[in-house]
Image 1 (cartoon, one colour):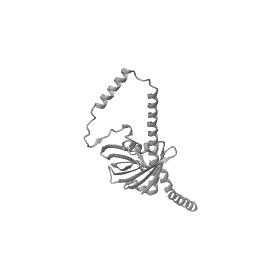
Image 2: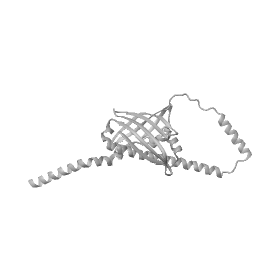
Image 3: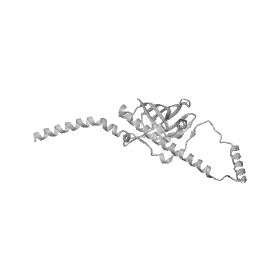
Image 4: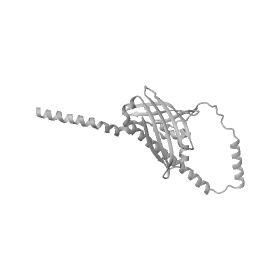
Amino acid sequence: MEFTNEFSVPTDVDTTFATLTDLERVAPCLPGAQLEEVDGDVYTGRVKVKVGPISMTYRGQARMVEADAEAKRARIEASGKEARGGGTAKADVVATLREGGEGTLVLVTTDLTVTGKPAQFGRGVMEEVGTKIIDSFAERLRLMLQEEQGATEAAATSASTEPAPGRGEAAATGAASVGAAAAPAPAADGGTRRLDQDPSREDDALDLFDVAGGATLKRALPLVGVLAALAAVWLLLRRKRD
């Protein structure tokens, strides 16, 4: 199934592109997703999904296969398998950015293949679910960018209003800076890097029933109508017999 969605964020194209291609930064914006480790350009993590009372966890990997800063185009391949079942999910996601309004417009094309319990919803429902997932991701991304922008502006304002340091303070600060620069950085072993987990997101899950409830109800209405008509006929027949 292939879906196309579009959203906007209030930052310039370069800033937005740099953010979207930093998977560690944007992963928390995706409902139910948590990154666990990084090995080169391969990111391993999990996505917790709920279908009403049924809970599933997909574990898998994502890889940035293209990040064209000049064309403002990025492509991510992701695949996962249900931790306690045979369900699988595979996605090829392409994001293209362009200037729009007071910020950036992001066009997202997703080629999705799903097996197992979520596949029972069908294309129409999955498309509506995908749209709501993108909307939720975009809202979290906007909030994150606005908070970061606000913090940057606050820091710049604070720095501009602070009094200039005295000669002794400047010397001490300079010495500290040189010392910090001279300090050796932690040696990289080139292996897998484990990521700290946010305990507050432990129960964060993508509830497909919540996001697909309206769509599922729409598709169930014809069946409900038929059942209601049959019930009405049955009541009429019963009254005639009585």
